[in-house]
Image (cartoon, rainbow, N blue to C red):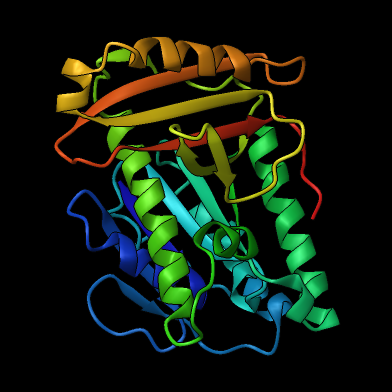
Length: 277
């Protein structure tokens, strides 16, 4: 899989993905140097970044297969996101990972820009121009983690975001020992991810997604427990039955073996509806 970081926030998350061998990473931002880095000239505002965007097709030509474009919504350079999509439009399975900042700290100009970016990219997903958009709120991730010190604040948030997306990708490419991870419906392209504590049956989403229509739960369970715990199957069935509501009618799950002593879980939520901020 290819990870394309656009702007400071996007490149920081792409660098976290680069720690895993499954990903090929590309970086597009100001003052980037080195292999798979593209330096963009500083512009006065988002309109100029869009108008003066270079042709990135050659730079991204080696991005074979599925692509995540990672974007921080408030950065002016995010106005180039549609140009990045144009450069890889012949690739299969293009998704956007949209990082929403703490909007309370943004200037009015930044708020307007973030609002436009947030809505336009969702419209692209809903129309099928891209496969999916994953909405992730820094505020929501901080709430999942708990107290985070100032030094290393974004590093910690990015680490949680990337490790979650990575483990979900790993499970998607493995065969579960029970259940199966269903592909969401054709129109349900607006998504988020989260942590699922199945011991407490507690969900912690990275974005508060409205009008969820599908949910997918990932159980990562130690081999020893899978062999010895006779009550686990009944627990999972009970939990999954309880997730089916009038709104969320489609629920799937997969159980995956691990070599760890601690069990953990993840979830994906999908909606057909444009989200509000």
